[in-house]
Image (cartoon, rainbow, N blue to C red; front, top):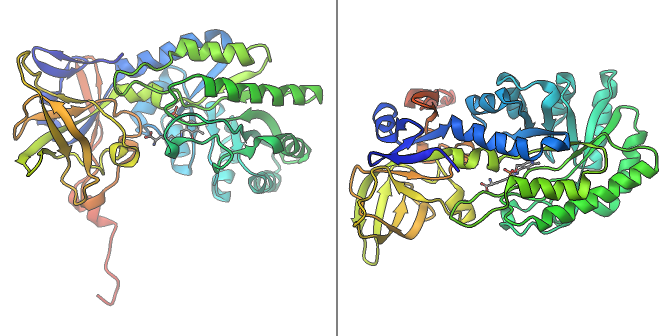
Length: 419
Ligand code: LLP
């Protein structure tokens, strides 16, 4: 469910015409819908209302400060994975007591900042990190509040590049060693063990891997309880998939039921770290067709967005629906085309042999479900400026990240004295 729809034959974000936005902002640009962000957050919040859960938005999915602020205003916390993300979360007004710091490679400086900021918990992923954090905390006369991330070794049945809960993945403490490391953590003077955490992967379209992981977390909680050291919280990570195509994905209500059935009786406060399900369908990438080129064996629609703007198709073979901003007439004949960007490699392809209505030079198109891991993963490859981001609310819009000028892009570089 989202708030991008055709009105009078033109695709709108809520009440704002994307054709008009393209005139005002230029293409390519990302556009986010406040109503969709709010809806997704509320649907999840309602689904877990009886579960004593804190929803910490995984801001790696969309780290625009206005987007974070929109969700924070509804009560969302943040899951952050770097100093930059922590700074963003704090800048967007997320209270420190709703911030979780995840990631396998936090530097000492990041651990120091996390301890000094008084965040809810730092999710520790290895014994060397545990020792480093213990040391950081003691050097400040503090105890660091941690979650220990375990790797439950379940197959999330998702793309290999976004599977994180198998034992061959770099994440978390191997499940069979977790009891030992949990005990060790409890014994460290600079550490307060508050939580066990897991995150098994992203874009999960089946609940069974979640259930399997939850059972393993349950066993660990019961073990700690038996030792008189029940954790106050359980962090269940993110991962719930969204429909990119029209394939069904589990509803937040079913996801909540899987949590309730397996963990509901443990008396732990829960932390959820959803990224994609909050922002995926709340964003689109709008682009203009530069040329339509008839190749030897196929037709290419060459648009002004490229893999630097949205890398998911090139990186994960991801599917994004492509919508013409001007609605196709009912009798339009679809024909297969390759939709590509201007970058100098063949991987710069958004869709191969996609059946689309006729498109011509200067037409506008929109890549749907681009709100998660779209702009956040963009780069300036080929010296292309980062696409700006626009946030819409009803009939209003604001450019919430401007397109950098070429002067700004070049300003960080300088010539050495010998040139
Ligand atoms: N928590 C942790 C510790 C994570 O590593 C992630 C995502 C999340 C939460 C949020 O997961 P979500 O609810 O968004 O699935 N760039 C890839 C996705 C990478 C996900 C990385 N971790 C993509 O475009 O599909």
